[in-house]
Image 1 (cartoon, rainbow, N blue to C red):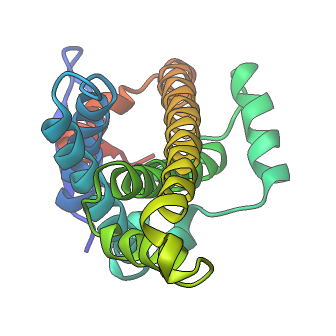
Image 2 (tube, rainbow, N blue to C red; image 1 turned 180 degrees about the vertical axis):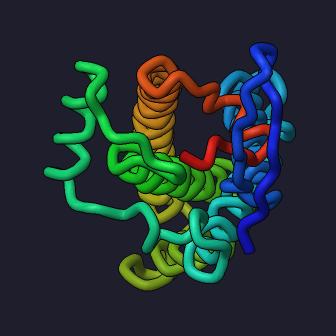
Length: 225
């Protein structure tokens, strides 16, 4: 249900405002912002904090995806998912300050939401893989342990498993550690790049439409027209 309110500006003009972003979307947005930067800057020094920040992001992103199907109108994917051509056209018009204003997500904003969700999920997934192969911990540790056991027992004669087999597994584990670490860092950096683009787009749209979109994500309200 959309709620409306009347606010009065300093000039005495009355503006109708509507509730666009529900409480879950706002809490999700700012919690993920904090958790992402906490995880990004605590990788080595505060590893436990890094891991739990990643878990927080993963759970919230899954909840946001579900909310995209059952949440209020402007939270649903059906309200803002569009094709790349429409998003590109909007972006060009936004740069020239001729873009149409959307109460919910704009076409370019909708594409960015999908990219950010995908980037965050990929970052969490690669982090879980790395945590499993490097520390034998986390939700994927069982899968990692089973693969190591199979590598020792299945292809190598039992008599050699304690020497050659273990050396082969250690080398293989080292390669896996390096692979997942590099992939995790690459995707995390790409996600950070998307975040920077997102902030730039929000600032540009705020200027073009003369509306404080950051404040809207805090209060949940935007101008009706």
